[in-house]
Amino acid sequence: METLADCQEEFCYNLLTPHKGGNNHGNWKQPAWCKTEKWISQETLPDIRQAKRLAARYGLSLDVLTGFDGDAQEIQEVLDRTSEETSGKIDWTKMWSKKYPILAQYQQEVDTRPYTRKLQELLDSLKKEYRYGELDAFLVLKDILAGLWKQGGE
Image (tube, rainbow, N blue to C red; front, top):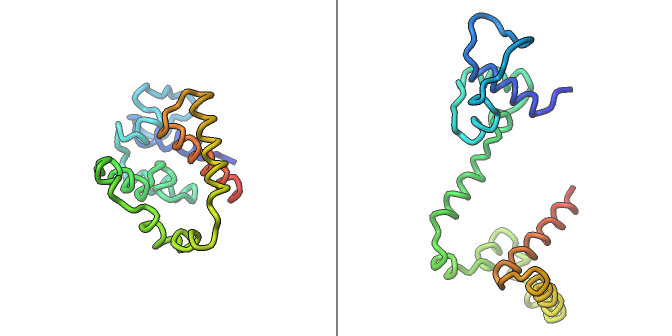
C-alpha cells in the first residue's frame, strides 16, 4: 500500500517535472526544485487539473494530497493580525465558553485551589529547572496538557 508521502512524491513528479511524452518513472531524476516541501510550502504551484486526477486516483481530497488546511491557515492569519494588546483585552474563558459551556460553569462547581497549587508547583519547576520565564513556562505546561488530551483522544 502506498503512503501519503508516496502519493505526494508522484504528485510532485507528475505536476512539476517537465517531461515529454509518457511517464518515465523508471529512470527520472527529480530536480532539486521539485521536492514535495516546495509545493506544500507554496514555493511552487501544481497544475490543479493534474492534482484533481491524482487525488481521485488515490481516493484523497486535494487538501489531504497537498497538505493544505484552509481552516488552520485562516486561524493562523487571524492570530498573526492580532496584537498582544488586543489579545490581552479578550476574555478567552468567555469566548471559549460559547463553544465549551463547561468553561462558564466549572468555576461555581470546582474548588480550583488544590489544582492551582499543583499547577503553580509545575510552573515553578519548569522555571527553575529550565530557566524559563513565566510566559514560556506557562506555554510549555499548556502544551504538555494539550499533548495529554490528544493522547487520550486517540
